[in-house]
Length: 246
Image 1 (cartoon, rainbow, N blue to C red):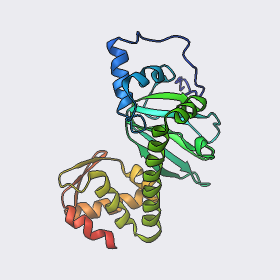
Image 2: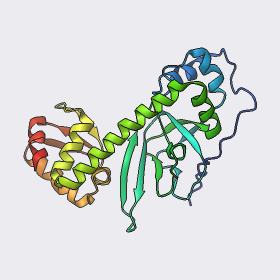
Image 3: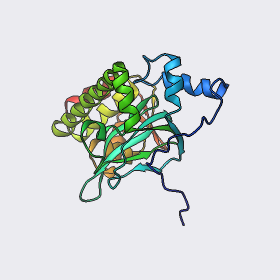
Image 4: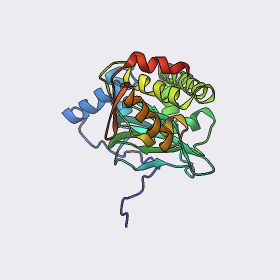
């Protein structure tokens, strides 16, 4: 029986500091927050007060942070690990929307007038996150316009990436879509190891795992990639790039 405690979206404001403001742990946490894309313009002094408005949580690989039934309005700040955002089709098939890397935020939909409905967030690695309430983040955005501008900048990049992926799914074949994902994740470098399963690749491009396996096997026979357990090693970047026009 699964005894894992479900992840709660309820943000509990701290009533007292969990660590002395000048302690090494507090300074390390503040430095980590300053490296996040939306807070990189803030001074360490401003972060000192802001850090007290966040609640730190840990979550294990495979833990669902929120699902289509959740309504809480909080912003997630990912400090360590990776989180996958996805939707489920009526047939139950998973369609990946994005993979969130450390140093940025997710769960922003309620802040731009949209609901979390139909969207899931799941930790794909053991992760460390901070949670901030809607009232706190909106207050910060009103006081510090640079935070709002950074958030718009990040959302703009995500929108452009979503549009590119939709174009791939609409106009490219499955081999071309897989080649595009591998090139993007590896930054087009020969010998680069992409840690990804066949199922994860299928979720990213909207294809069945069996179809992905067949294409990857073909790529390996052609010397384009080398396959391992949960990983793909790029061996011929130029060859993969030639598959983009299929």
